[in-house]
Length: 400
Image 1: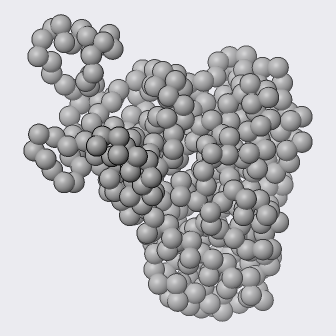
Image 2 (image 1 turned 180 degrees about the vertical axis):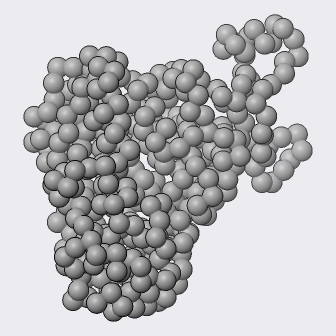
Image 3 (image 1 turned 90 degrees about the horizontal axis):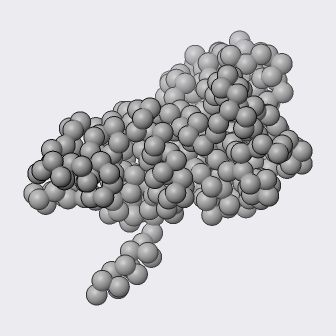
């Protein structure tokens, strides 16, 4: 019977795993996951305490190291991603920083895609070099550039795909092959695609990182992050870094994220369906200069999107008019889409990357990355798609 149960579990769909996996019930037999807010744990004897600290006995030691509620979140994420192990983190940026810093040391070298969220770029291009870890930024779309950037001391490749904000794609399988030949880890930020829309580990990546703050929570309630990958990396290299430096996920936030995971497939399907409609509407409007959406055939990397993504995604970017004032006029005229630098919320959100998320970049660098003063990024929410389309229409008309 046990064998049959295991076989059935292995065949569960993602939707079933996101409801059932990782549930650790207490002696009270609760249906919803229990919330353990405690920081410490007690032991039946001094000998038991010694054994736990030595790793000779199972059990929790301190919630900076591990916690039952956080463990449930980690196990559910692991099952969804198909990873050997996972660790919850305090935020998405904590996950990015930890995935790199736990692995690298002075004298190492990182190759990274140039198109990065501002804080990720800070870590790769500013923070790591302060500690003697060199970095090279490349056009992530160009496999030859990745290969040319490899040095004898290259230990990690890092990139996001689709990129923030204009949804450029990186060939995960192609880059991972180059990294493996160089004996370097491939670390992928998979936030924009969501774990349902893209499977980096199946494409050859070693490590996947998430800002769980985004679609995994999906309702703008809390911060959280996750790092997933091989058991040895997660449970030894990363865990040692985590327990000694303290970027721990709050148990309460882990509980919120667990509840968010239960509805992730329903929400992501609605996000993506509406995003595709919004992208089509924008593409047909005379005032819109360009639309960026991987699910559309006019995306320059649409063939790659079809190869490695299950759907076009929940994010859309577009260029309107010629200047910042044109973008601001549209943003200020929107009623349903609210101005925010966040994304992945149930509520539709709009941002002006050049003056917010990517404002620390020079104008020349932004232009090189395709981020212009007239670029707007949309995070399409769960409102009725007809209402979203009407809001876009009226905002474009009002801004004209």
